[in-house]
Length: 435
Image (cartoon, rainbow, N blue to C red; front, side, top):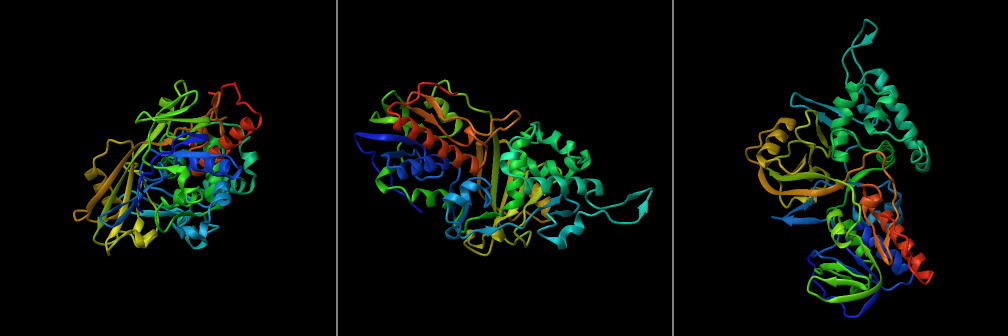
């Protein structure tokens, strides 16, 4: 979809939202629904922030490997899921090391695949030989999953906080299973290998995976923010317009134009937010690189995530098995992601070939996305939601003010709207800063 930049209107808006990612769109929609005059300014040529989809040689490529979780409360509240044409991944993942792969799946969803998890063979010395997980670990994970799936999210948020690694060990999961099975998978979820992420965030994310489905929209992940943006008045969303400064009276655009507003909400990534709001404390960020290749034949005939047990890459997946329409021809579209931004394409492609057991010499490189601000870091202690008031009439929202997820971004935008509305209704904005 092509969008043309719209010239920013002269004069004032009651509220200016800087950034048309999920947080900014949620904030703008809630403010508009409350009858406020809102102007959204987006520097890029389309909405979505990190959730964008490009077309390269006919292939639809998300900007970095993306998944869409249907269990998030904000997702269910705001989006028409049927209109997205969601295509599911296989529940669970394949854990591969080049010598073979084992299927890791929630047995309540795929009972027939549970055998890959179970120990096999005869009793020797009181232990069952073989299998991916020891029986004690299966029992410990079963209890953990049952609690996360059933307990209210509000209760999970109040659990004693530690790192994810310590939480798994305290739950009775052995170091072997943590390091050999869970760490490789969770590294791709939180974009860090140390499992330093807050246990509270882990439980909430794990809960969402147990209760929802991981999918991709038919037209790419960019369809999600586009659906939200379509509900705004067309003249109140301005693309291709960069804000240079936030002032006491509004904003100054990069071209020097001045737009006045009673309130300004900065809904950008962490680096840009810190520039526009000097003194704002922002978290560290996690980086990731995603490589896309066109393969003559599919190296795996199922819509399943392949996780690297050796942790040389995070994961790889044949996206055309998930969403057949993302490829313009009969070639397979393969996505492979690695931590950080320093990996060479040839290294990632070679490792993907090892994991699939496939010859990658004929794979055509399509694009690579090196994303420095892919996800805010979430080590313990982690506030799951932060206030959005920064200063008098100035607000900030985004997943870096909540949790690094679609849910976090939307919830932070909703909180910003509530705080703006409360301050406007009171006749004056709050003077207390929350940094």
